[in-house]
Image (cartoon, rainbow over all chains, first blue to last red):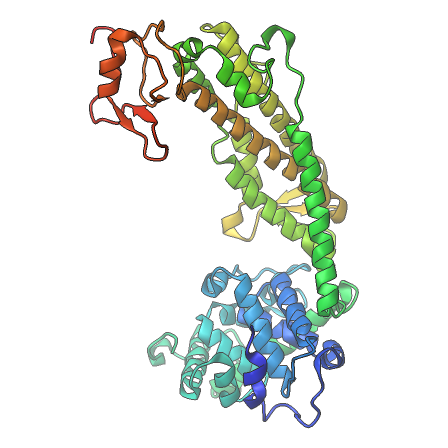
Length: 192
Length: 330
């Protein structure tokens, strides 16, 4: 049984309005239109392919429909449940994005690093994001969706310090790989 | 050398440049997601648990129905050429082979094992299984409306499966067997039935690929060439149907080959008292206390046999380290 519902009440206090607590299907119907694209993007940044992201996003909304589910901070809840759903699809999350293909724009893209709608510069940034270690990638995905370090830490099940370190290392790697900073400044790599 | 936003002002503040790049990447990804969702007809419908269950049940029902009908079709007896029907004329597959005279099975066991080895589909089912996963995923994505024409499909597994099929003996184009004509020929005819089905299904797949898809170098190095499928929905479903047939026929061929090997190995309860064992390779033969060997061979065969670990009361010839071939001079 998924315990997300019982633990999520600490999440996203800064990013979400928790004043209206809807139940199950009502909440899913209310949020489906507005939150679905953002949820798919969150999963894409985690390393999911387009069909994987859609499956996991659908699954999260399906789970949200359960009548016994009470959710106070639905944006964080959706991301956490969708991420777990995506992880269950994978043999190994790390393998999925260990070597993303070179950016090559196509209409029927599997990752945004291939989307024709995304500029060359941004495709390169996304490609580098997807090459980050899993925890750094996850920390960046939560951060880019506007969640605080505390919220990300609770969702990821790690300490706020670890989140900060993963974010810092991710940014350092990105800056070096993008040529914004010298490689000599790069500190020890890896996840925390 | 930085190729991103390379003005002096921005270079002085790499944190700001990175934030700008990340924000732009986020915004453009959101635009791309929206465009993709719009192109596939808008947001997918919200699947509440009842709807999700209904879809799962409908999909499972459809696939099981298709699998059952294909399985029944694959298992239905096929006509056998009249001039070589010794193997399959007397009933089911296993009993037909095993009912061939034990002395004949023993005499031609090496030839029969060589034939079975030639017909063994190797890792065809593995490649086909992987190709089926690829195509089923494509069909599922089409069902969900995630793809537009043309869709892209990795062909590495499918190409490997087709190459494996081409390594099998082509039906009805072999020279007539020189030894054990009736028995070995019957086995080949028996296996030909399965390879003919497999060749036919593989031919359909090849024709479909030749007519309906365009090959392009894949950007994914692990999957070899990819195909751009035109008229996606119909082609993908046809490809899936043909591959599922191939998979069934490959499994049926593997079972048939196993039965030939069994007939060449299993001599439990066989009466071999009049068999000429000189020069025959007996290694691997399974026998039991009911097996009757020529009197002069009984002790030697017993010495080079060991109890089979998986079956009680069954012995296997040749499990000792020494050469198990029992020569006529021994």
